[in-house]
Each structure stands twice: as C-alpha cells, then as structure tokens.
Length: 373
Image 1: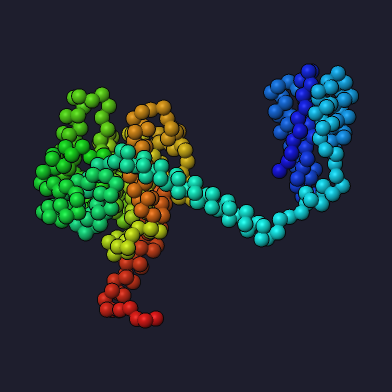
Image 2 (image 1 turned 60 degrees about the vertical axis):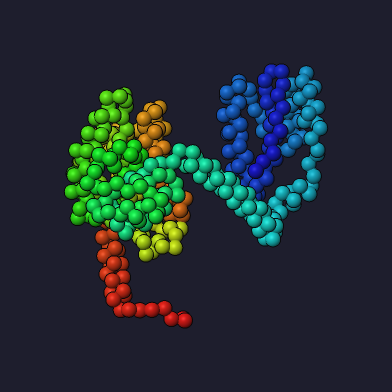
C-alpha cells in the first residue's frame, strides 16, 4: 500500500514522492517495483520521473528542475512535513481483535454481494425457462424431473404408462411409442435417463424421428439448433462415444454424472457431487478437460484449433447460454459442481465406485437399524 503524490509542470515532467507503507526489509524492493511501474506509465505520456526518500527532496527537485512552475512547488509544499513518529505508526500491526472485526465486516459484505448475484442469477433463469425432456421416467427419471419442474417446463417419456404420476408431479407425459410428439414439444434439453444396457439402443431408436424433426425445421429456418442432449450414466466414456457417433451435429452434448440418487438425495442435493463435461458445443467437439486445472475461457477442438467461449457467433453464444442454464439448475440446488473429462471420471470411478456399491449392498442386506448412539 502506498500514497503517491504527483506534480506535473508545463514541460510535462512529473515528480513523484511515494510513501511506502511496507515492512522495513521489503521497502527497497517495493520502491524499485513502484518506480518501474511509474516509468512505464510515464513512457505513454512523454514525461520524466524523479523518486526520492522524502517529501523534502522531491519538493527541492521540483523547484530546481522547474523554477518557473510555482504551482508545482506550492502543491508539494502544502504536504505535511515528515513526522518522526510516522515510522512507528506505519509499522504497527493491527491487533488480533481489530483484525477479526475487519474480516467479519468483509465477510458480511461478500455475503451480501453473493446473495445479490444469486438473486440476479435466479431471475435470469426464470426469465427464459428451459423446456426439458426426460427419456426414461423410472425412479431416477422421476427424481430429477421433480426438481427440473421448479425451473421450467418438463416433458417426460417412457415405455410404461406414467400419466398419473406425471400429472401429480406437474409434468407432461408422452408415450415413448410416439417419439414424433415428444420432439414436437420444442425441447431445449433432452436428458437420457435410461440404464447403461439400453442407452445406445434408445438413442438409435430415436434417431430417425430426431432427424425428421430437424429436417422439417431446416425448411423454414436458416440455422437449426437441435436439442441439447445430456446423459446421466455412471460410466462416461461409453455415453460420450455413443452420443458423438450417433447424434447429428446440430445437437450439443453434455456428459454428466450426478453422484447421488433418490435415496442419498431425498433430503436435497446440497453438497452432493455433480460431475460434468461440456462435450460438443455448436458442432465443435471439445478436448477432454484436464481435471487438474480449472475450466478455461478457451478450448481446443479435435483439429487442434483454439476457440473462445465468447466467440462472436450468435449460434455459439446461444449454445453456451443453454448449457449454462441447464447446469445452473444443479448449481442452484446446491450441488458441488465438478468439471472433469469423461476419461478421468471413469479412471477415478473404477477405483472407488465398485467397492462403494458392494459395501452398500452388503450393509443393506444386514437389516441394520439406527440406535440411540
């Protein structure tokens, strides 16, 4: 932290005194650094700089170099003279109690700002609600659809007739035997919530109807965006490869794994892990995200070309907006959002998921019950 006094003369020379408020052993280092930054600034305005250890030296320099500039001298002379006790006050550290009070004030301000941002975020979500389709309305499909309907319109489909359950939940049911009607619901997102054994078969069976739906739209629209496809399988590379191979390029793809279910998430999703990979955006296939680093503002496609998520492309922006709106549902429900490549996910899961499920099944068969302790 420093106080900087700047004087300028008619000849555009600038005289600067820096009151360094730093530890004594770091004073010279920070003075040199500050002076370097000042020189960089002056290089843009054609001035020169003079740095000193005291206000008196700086004032003297101003007078000697620009005797005609009385305004410059008067400004510097108005500054208070150095006090012998300045150093003692400068290097006094705040007490622990004072520091704690300051941190609490900052924490309160950050909490207020966070609450304000969340209100704006929810307002943005509600201003343009998604229409979400769920394929597979079994136990897990019902589990996620119940939450989705709080944020938008939900249309579900399944082989069995779940009309009564869907009506009670406030979502629309369409029989899987009528896929054309399902696609004509103008879906923004389609979540495929079927088992891994029937995942590829389900995608293949829907493909002709999806292509027919997109072809009809191409007649009247210049740029057609298909629905965003999302899987929720616990094995990610299989889902990724299947969707990339079968789904038309007009469809964006996000691979996800909510690492919880109807039992572990029955009291809410707060603090539960949600792993995801943005796989294909506006026809561009993204390389796997390095799970050891944060998501970047840029990504590389399979051809090695760098792209920005802020590319000046309306279609790209629309795709990103839709993906972020969908992910925000999980985030607003309190999930711990974990961006991770499908490859890394499967590698980690192979080492832990089997034993987790095995022990869960074993304990479930023991008929254990809660005790007072």
